[in-house]
Length: 305
Image (cartoon, rainbow, N blue to C red):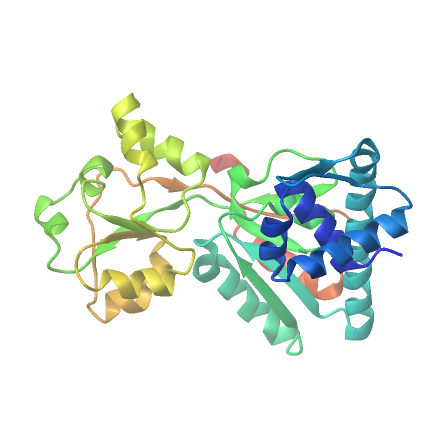
């Protein structure tokens, strides 16, 4: 049977068409990668790649094998997940993915509440604005995703909670020039260097519209942010030097504001964070159900939608 390593080698080589690049991505030598590909071809019983001095590409058999390999990869991940739950015994293991604005505002208070009832819960939290949540949910890599609504397209076999909308706030060092502007617009704020999490397509569209919607606005937004990281501890620490404006939800800056590191920027019309939680339907463990029920307490009132 194909191993996880040989499957990864196959996927990397299919994506890069380069033994050197695929080996670099896996952190192995070219010789090791060649061995893994040979193992994959031996198990498949067909030649998967046309090889040349400059590159390699999938054969017709390799192209037909690709979706089969994807299905096998999903099955192996699901198997590992189910074995982990079996070893866990009480179904107290939970894997949560979220965007960078969600940890303090939603995931932390929910986790604290669940831990009171399930003190042995093992929580694995993946924070990334680049996460593809739907795919990870359907392949059992995540149990729940909490993040921007635009990350979760309409799909079958999932449950979605739409959360109450929250304003995004901006902060800067107390001596930063932005505070001299008084109540200002987002366009005023973005005249200064910005540090933020990854600005995915939805945020870039929102910023472009708020800046006027023309090509000049699009060009400006394409260069944002100057500093990008989904780790807000890093961003707030870096911004203490007084150069950067940083945006997030208010809980993210709670300690920094209390310590006087930052002052909140007065915005006339702050942008809104559209947030949801999503999980796959059916087969929930007790701790997942407990986590989901806590998230439902933040659900938007349908009358206010």
